[in-house]
Length: 316
Image 1 (cartoon, rainbow, N blue to C red):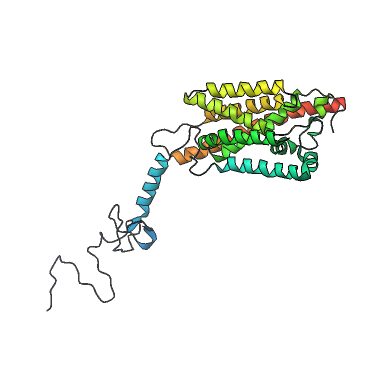
Image 2 (cartoon, rainbow, N blue to C red):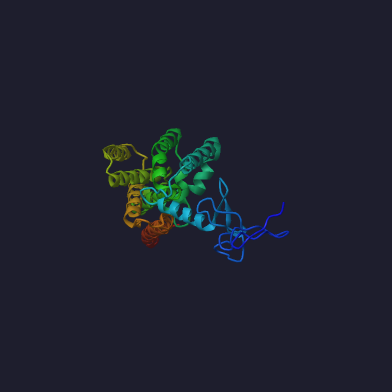
């Protein structure tokens, strides 16, 4: 049976031509020269092949996808210092613990002398071997030494890594190790036994984490008495027992606390409706500058001590 089409009725499709309900309702809003029967599942507008984005159900147009991404960026969760939340295991903490354990195993099987010769920090040779400012933090002087440090790192590091984010946490630990050995250099009298005595251990980095935890808890309004007691007790032990570098503990504590304090002080604020991802990137750049600034200050302090030691003839 034949069917006629009157005025105003939809045109009959020709052979090989797609059928559209109207000339305006079936064209892509971004590309008016491209007809499309596929509609966005969110806004119900047509979308050509170039503007289609696959979704869990059907397709979305690029405008709806962009709007959804912007909404997610506005509500993206951030930590108290502006970092992306750690949703995985505290991998940096475990990596530091694993590295300390592996290096101590190498020391234990007979490589202690070689490792100490190349990687242990000592003030008199610190200019000639600057890498020891960091590498000495992964050497240890015995099973009790490495065991206590690994336990403290496991107990404190997991929380701090989730609060600061992976890279900020790693930066605080490493700059605290650097700060601890800088304090050893600065507080060692030139030409005395302390000037020629090597130091090993992650205690400088750990005290930096203690300082970071103290600042973090005080800024959050949390109870910080236990952290203060922990710091005081460890300092007392450093003075009571020989062979413990209280200078390294002090330097690490000051630098770690300063780093996190500056993280809070320089953290950009996110206004309502702001792109929180963009704010987080800005925060990361600023905090990277904070860490770089601390490193420059530490190097400058070392340079003064090196100059004094060179004048006295006690520098390799």
